[in-house]
Length: 274
Ligand code: NAD
Image 1 (cartoon, rainbow, N blue to C red):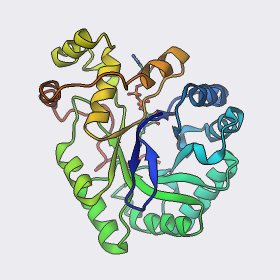
Image 2 (image 1 turned 60 degrees about the horizontal axis):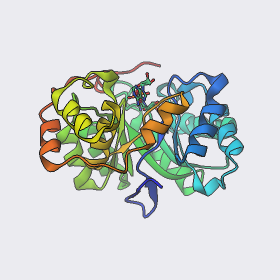
Image 3 (image 1 turned 90 degrees about the horizontal axis):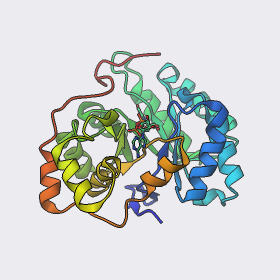
Image 4 (image 1 turned 180 degrees about the horizontal axis):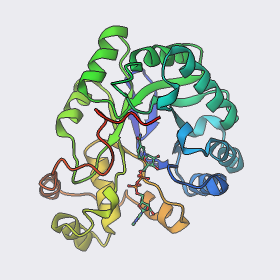
């Protein structure tokens, strides 16, 4: 149902998915199963979200064949380093109840800790062992990407970073395009900061879509993968209903003017939280 994006390792992934950050563990299985029933095929999780058991349970409850669901998890900052990252990924698989994930990411570079290169080597090993079909990173900036690519010759398939209308990251996205790295947008709705912005409202009025749908459609049209979060069935449904309208070139240009370089989340150059 949702378009597929080609990955630089020959695989492919759904462009649209849903995220599980801050989804309470007690309702994660139900939320995941509901989303899969509605048509989502990409589930973005992480060890630090504390709900991998529910993520795995929801996938089983959906009854879908394993290879129809694209499952992501991430290695947390305190688990960086070669041996620790291997153990952390294996612990995630155990909690998920899966033999492999489709995509394993390093959650943050944590440059002061300076272990992301060893961690990347662990992800390469896990991929070679079939425990992660594809490997990538999250919150990496150009110097971090250049270093892991230069040292290992393995380019991440994807970089999951904060992108929303007020933080469009054009230089990083151009770097991704040049290296065939998929950009995946986290906090895509930007905490509602742009819901009232004139370019968003204009498209909403013209199409009858909600501001959230206009912004999610903008993510798809800049070529990004996008993983909005909602625990409400109506919200999940709304965020999937993006394929019967499009922003025009002029509307895309107006959206570009909203970029202020203003983050909702932490600066990856300085974020070292364990
Ligand atoms: P989001 O942009 O998806 O926004 C979620 C908020 O918007 C919730 O409060 C939700 O109730 C509300 N919302 C959802 N749909 C709506 C709609 N149609 N209309 C109005 N409000 C709506 O933010 P997020 O959860 O921060 O990010 C999405 C996912 O990205 C996360 O769940 C997680 O999987 C991932 N993420 C990753 C990182 C990272 O460091 N890699 C950081 C943050 C989030």
